[in-house]
Length: 277
Image (cartoon, rainbow, N blue to C red; front, side, top):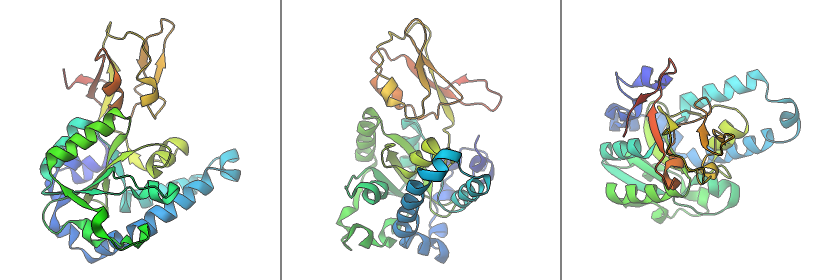
């Protein structure tokens, strides 16, 4: 299990621990201020820093260890995530009493395009999304936030899954959990830092994908779905998934015509146990 499961899971996966969604955490004044200015202080600043680190001196020579450690430590304290497969997304949505569809801050900061691929999840009322300063989008209009039910949210996220978006869950002042995001590497800060820069801004999922023996046809449909460079093809033209690179998002499964890919529990000892048939 990840570090957060040990610290905040109470014997289970940390994101399935209802106390991490509690209104008591949301009522903390420091956390409320963090949420209010989240887009400006985290998304805008993060987008600027990632763009800077991705070019020039750091691209040629790498990111110094001191900077790397500071970025990761700050992330784990304030805004940090973990990759989830669809099955666990549904379990999280079952915990939430309020689900709010939210415009993606990462995409707006990088491309000035609105894409409602994020979902605020709150145990109780009011939702934390009501605290956010909407001037980030150039307007105080809260109409960009849409309250929906679990079935609609899951249907939307299943569509995103087929389109290759990686699902992840995020804290707003750890351990308070506030959102499920559906991310693409072109604009997602988490993917740009974790994959592009090698700076850990989210944990790997608790699962790992594997190909069922004899089930792969070698069609290649899964390859563009993987944003973690974990999929390759062997000399026979059949799919192989590197468990060391796999983040366990499971989006490769959605486009496999032969249903050849399964998720298994990720074990610290490297042994994968069957989770879903």
